[in-house]
Image 1 (tube, rainbow, N blue to C red):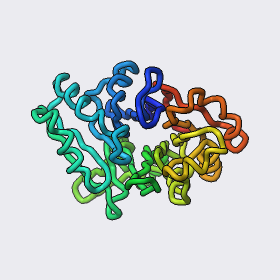
Image 2: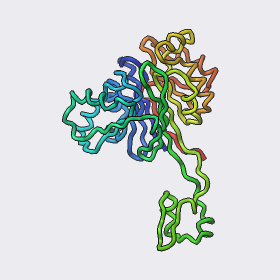
Image 3: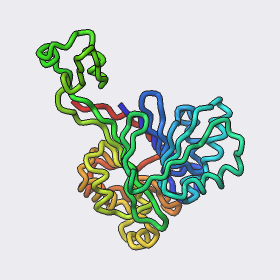
Image 4: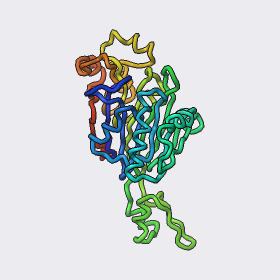
Length: 302
């Protein structure tokens, strides 16, 4: 299963009742944080999720409302006793950006390791989760991410018996381990059926719709996508800024066959995000306006 918390739902600047957009995903006691604005640390404390769980941070782009919370969060992690490295992923130029932020926190008790996400490695694995990134259209280089938890096939006891695999190896094979016993080699493929449907989350803010983003989001259990404005008449204004509106996100959700859509990254000028939700719901019914600390747990479907 995957625990998911939308820590905030605002864009541009934090407001008293609307934190900046950020998402945290937990799996087996480890955490992945996507973006980190000025209010992200406050949201983490309010949701009760430990900052010490965060091993990896995915950065969509280098605008202040997505990265200026990093130094403070790192200092809190250090004050909480963290000594293990923290890995940060983002567009080329990440190291330069991190070095600039480090000016205000130069003595962290752990290493911050930067990973450039480029065309050569848009796919990578962290904490047992498969991450895929695609470039999206914005005023500066920007990435959207999908995070997938694969699921192995069902254990087939009949096959294990037919292959004369000792009973004491069944558990290890079921966990994906390969067993070498003298000249005999037993692999998970000997006892597992076809891979089953796993879990998938796609996250995209500060971007225009695209066929690449729709492909990235395909069959996601949860699609977290920006809706800078809800009013369809503001589509042109959003496009000029490299953003999208509610009905554009809803159309991508429908085209990508996702299970659920959460809107986020609202303009500060939009005081009542739910006011325009009906426009997008006509395109994609299972849509929600994201709110601070919106949380869900995704489970495998049988």
